[in-house]
Image (cartoon, rainbow, N blue to C red; front, side):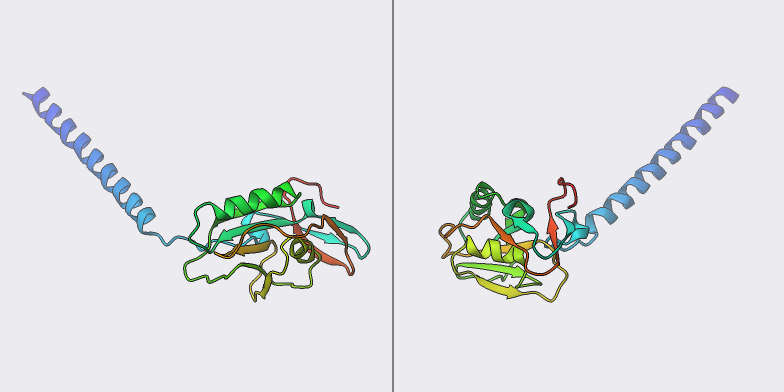
Length: 178
């Protein structure tokens, strides 16, 4: 008789522990499922897309030193990836690629940066023809490109420039610092 009671007590304890574990897992899963999604970072150094690098006046900056994010603001599928492929074919370093945030309106092509006089922006601009350049107030280190429905292909070509004044440019992570 005592073995039967011990067996029932052991079963009750085991079932209680399993129910508690199941509830803990359900609560953890629910909090993960309902947690807010962080906003994408547009190439800040903290996003891991690039590493800030200091260039002295007179240094040569090449397309390979420029990390570019490309976002599709058109309805054409694959346009951001197609543009990124063309840019990396000219030596630029790939950053993030994807769809532009909802509501982004771009006619042809826009460069978005917090420093429109950056040498990195100048090199990219020379490869795009006549892009619109938008100054951002936020801390964005990588150069971000938005392509719209009027975008067709790269125009012009420039692979390097001399840095006119000392500046910090967010470059590739896998390259040693200058």
